Amino acid sequence: MPDDLLPIRGVPASPYTRKMLSLLRYRRIPYRFLQGNLHGAQGEGELPQPKVGLIPILYLPDEHGELQAEVDSTPLIRRLEDEYPGRSVIPADPVVAFLNYLLEDYGDEWLTKAMFHYRWYYDADIEIAGSVLPHYADVSRPDAELAMMKQAFAERQISRLYVVGSNETTAVVIEDSYKRFLACLNEHLKSWPFIMGRRPGSADFGCYGQLTQLVQFDPTPSKVAIDGFPRVHAWVSKMEDLSGVEPGEDDFIDAGAMPATFIDLLKEVGRTYVPVMLANAQALEQSLDKVETQVEGKAWEQEPFPYQGKCLQWLRIEYARLSEDERATVDDILAGTGCEALLAPAM
Ligand SMILES: N[C@@H](CCC(=O)N[C@@H](CS)C(=O)NCC(=O)O)C(=O)O
Image (cartoon, rainbow, N blue to C red; front, side, top):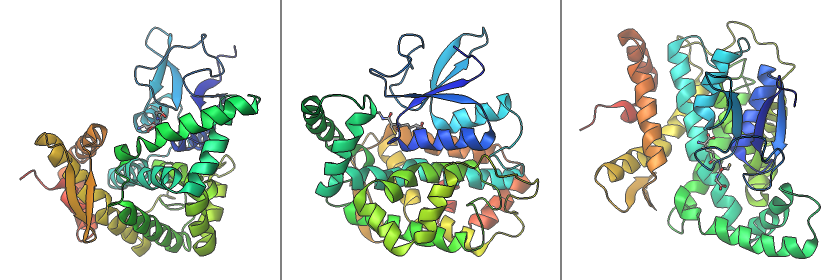
């Protein structure tokens, strides 16, 4: 086993797997991609199991040099920054790094609602995902076996729509927000090759991961993108392999000259992710069995999502780490976007 190649396990239909693969290519970190989920995947037996059953998994050495199975892309990206210098995806300016963190979390925790919703809500999308996805574990499985897997797989995923908050009430909110996000990104890309400026930040990879599925795979949201936003469609394809991009020191956006289109992206985050993250945290704090809030004047209802409660805490820790001056600059940038509510002291 060539131990200079970083092992990563995942599947092509997993947005977080795609986020990490693209990141590894951009960062020029040599890797080997073990295709499959936790069960029946390549390399099984030779590598440890993760504590939490999620993909992608990166196998990284602990302090004794033993490979450990690690999950959760956001902290993993920061760890890779320490272990593999150069071609950083974290802006050097702490203010811009904070905005990058916020938009990465929006991609990971909000756009994923659209991704999972479209895939398992509409018959045409269920049909395609159910037919294709089971092939990823073993492309040569007999058709009869796959037909059985198709149904079981689709049923399992449909039964988990509640986790991301996709239901009859929220469908319209999720779909409107997806379309507005595409429109905002489309405007931004007219002047900037990446969300974070002239070089990609981890936010670019987070949003890209979800868009690989929304824009390129699932038929209902793909049609929205192709019909209305061919520029975004092209961006997603370009993001897949940025190994040839040569980033410059000053290529991230500048905190002192925020593009209006970047502020518009933050405003979109403020319309959706912000009220839902706050209502979710409140429901968890009060041990309520339902999150209920309004998004753009429309009802939002879902079961509380403990992991997203932690995401909000981690975001606030990032904010608390800033100096007083940096926090004031972040506050100025976020004022009026709706995102400032995330950081307001608890009532
Ligand atoms: N926060 C994690 C989320 C990873 C995640 O949710 N992965 C999904 C697949 S895209 C998963 O493994 N779900 C469990 C399952 O499918 O059994 C990250 O950023 O890596």
